[in-house]
Amino acid sequence: MHHSLNNRVAIIGAGIAGATCARLLCDAGFEVEVFDKSRGVGGRMSTRRSEWTDCDGLIHTAHFDHGVPGFSAYSPNFIEFVKQAHEKSVLARWQPRMISDQDQINDETESWVATPNMSAWCRDLLSDSKVTFTCNIHSLIRSASGWTLQCAEETITKTFDAVIIAIPPLQATSLLKPHQPDWADHAQTLIQQPHWILMGVTSDVSPVLNWELFRPASGPLSLIIRNDAKPQRQQTPGFINWVIHASHEWSQQHLESSIDDVEAALKIAFSDTLGYPFNWHRASVHRWRYASDLVVKDILCPDLHLWQAELGLGVCGDAWGGDGVEGAWSSANTLASRLIKPDEL
Ligand SMILES: Cc1cc2nc3c(=O)[nH]c(=O)nc-3n(C[C@H](O)[C@H](O)[C@H](O)COP(=O)(O)OP(=O)(O)OC[C@H]3O[C@@H](n4cnc5c(N)ncnc54)[C@H](O)[C@@H]3O)c2cc1C
Image (cartoon, rainbow, N blue to C red; front, side, top):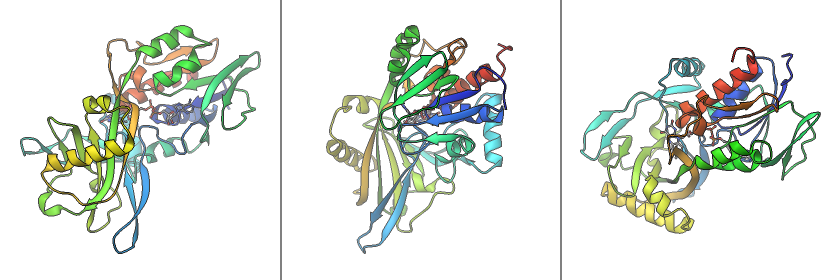
């Protein structure tokens, strides 16, 4: 058991930032509880599962990594962390056969995916923490005995010594406002770009398809991925599972369009881009309101996280750590160190 003032820690958000904090703090002997508003772990690093029926009436299961498709590791510390997950077979190298608009097949820079789906890494990192799902934390109350959390869906009676907020900045502002108004003002400036995703199943078009990842240089789409060709993904003979990213510009323009309109428009864009009339067996769209890439990039937090030791309040996530999975991890890693080794910083 860790003996410090901040022993009982609540983490809001079970994405890669929250899950990394949870793992590092659990390993250091803290008592950690994680709360997430959705029904599963991973946040923007997760996988959608759905069932669909083919024309013979057979039911199939399809998986779509509808958030981050894969990520790269650059800093030595992150590479080491990734290596450990690779050794446990939680992460695998992903080197898709890639094509650009110039019709060349290229090798992508080395990237990583979790296996057998993107949520698996966060699930592994959270394996020693208590996680409460479907729990949208809408306010934090600070009293002499510590922090209590308020959630619309259930009553949380426990008191915590410290709270870590690991959610996108615009969602964090209302939680921060009563306690650290300057942080809330800062968070409001960190605007992340939206992203519409089309995911679905078509008949196999292998004769016209010799690639697994395609980056159109222009038009409504920015990325087309054959999801079932990623490492250890389930394949259904005769069919292909696609994850198709609309560009940030297109997503911004269609941010408030209806789901039906977006699905129809992206299906047309997909067929037009590939010059092939696809037969869809199942399709749906997902809107990430705060997906990735800060609109204004020059106000990153110098410590990669925020921490107020007297209050026992911290904030981490990709927007503070420098974008993407590695940014989210770096932010969580530096914040966890503040709690684990308070005298070193
Ligand atoms: C379409 C797309 C493509 C991307 N492409 C790349 C890429 O190529 N490379 C790359 O490195 N990164 C990419 N990213 C970005 C990457 O996914 C994120 O940077 C990273 O996953 C963020 O992790 P996080 O833990 O900071 O936040 P999140 O993953 O957003 O986790 C936050 C969690 O908090 C929960 N939550 C929010 N509010 C509350 C609340 N009030 N109460 C309780 N729970 C709450 C959410 O449900 C979520 O689970 C992409 C993201 C998207 C969406």
